Image (cartoon, rainbow, N blue to C red; front, side, top):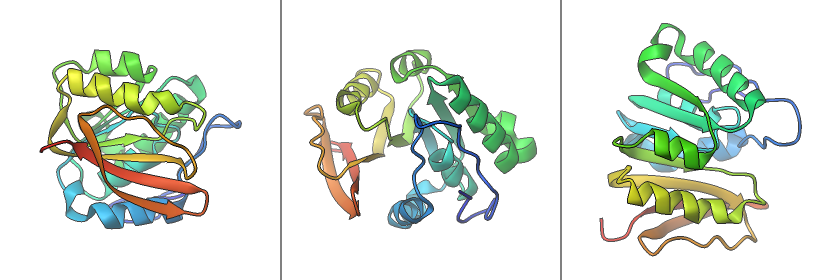
Length: 186
């Protein structure tokens, strides 16, 4: 795994050991960021199921302003921290916050903050986490106007979402689907 484009292009990313983390492939990540295009510039990014941190770190490499990356696994948080320090170097402290917390605790800790770009890529078995995380983010007013939500899931999975969220586009890559969503009516 590596950073595909931007300031840190080519930097190697490390994934935590074990089967609990399923990093987004370089191919899918490249496609997602081609679709996002200029929306990444200056964005405040939230990655609630960080794994290796690859999605948020790719966004930072491509010009996002800041990122919060959360994961409940100690091994994942260690990998995210290592990767973020390697990608951001001396800008780590000013542009990145790594939280060891599950998505519920992370959202509670982030009260008062809002984000322009949100990545949701929980373990595929956690189908309820997509909708629950989005309901909590909406209630916390953490989704900025025009926020883009990117959700990676198994292609065959049906993900229940709150009424306040609408899927605007879906792309499929083999057995994986990526949904792009936004607040309804914004």
